[in-house]
Length: 160
Image (cartoon, rainbow, N blue to C red; front, side):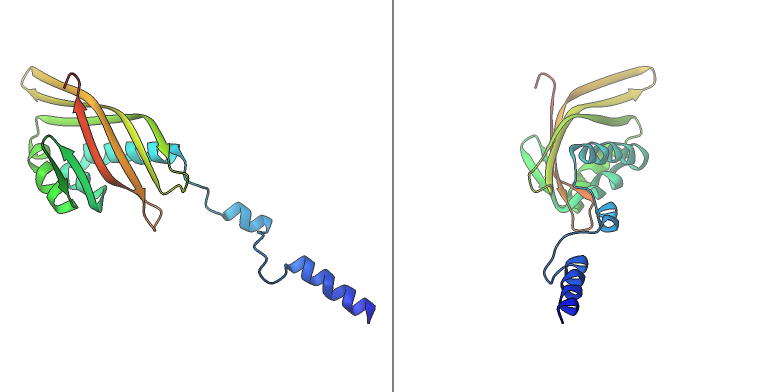
């Protein structure tokens, strides 16, 4: 009887008692890593690359469905409204917009964060190029699917 009891205790210890939340080494190696600021930087750079290749449609697609964009004098909310706002800008083949993050932080919960950096907007007509530069801030929200989406975006021109 003692031997059966001892084997039962050993099996419970080896397999984990009910409610045991420990992970096996296989489970640890396949667990999703916690989000990091580098993940935000990667999302921000992918956002830039997608917009460079696909314009206004890409711009709007990176926003959360209820995301917002700050522009002088107003806030534009929702993907459809943001697409309408940015459509004319990106439809102009003489205009380009690029940016690169240089700072960011992540919330303790890991589902919100922000990036900030420099942007450059160029307009080239023939041999003439005009350049506008400034700083931007993008607030990111992690979706249930594990994708970063823009919750709020805005920028300010240098000197303005």
